[in-house]
Image (tube, rainbow, N blue to C red):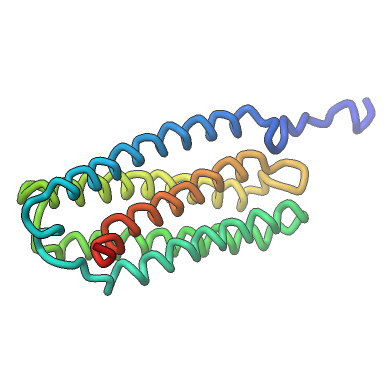
Length: 196
């Protein structure tokens, strides 16, 4: 048997991969969920008779560095993906590892910020909105971290190469989506009160 006869297929690639279309469907569905949640915030804020937010302007002390951390995690994921497309598995490992560490740091800082809040999920409509929206985002971050860890493990096992990396690209789409959603959440809860 010739070598060509026993090679396994590399599967569909890029935008032709069935998983790519599935992830696009997930991203669009989840984007609609966050659009509804953020619409709820603005709708309720526009009808508030008391000052909004009730506890005064939000602190940016943790939120701004956390935003930079999540953007950096998205950039390193992109950098790693770029490396494997050029056949550089080492760059992919570094990119995914850095993204994973930055993602865990983001998660930990967000939990710290939750603990420092003077309000809770049940303390009023603002608290309910804040913890619901950021909680949904944190659930997505956690899922993204699990994906990054799996992709890093598969990278260490040598599953990806210049010709075979569709699963990595699909996972990266989700991680970039998590970053974009956080930018919308950050603009809504942390920046928009300063513009009012």
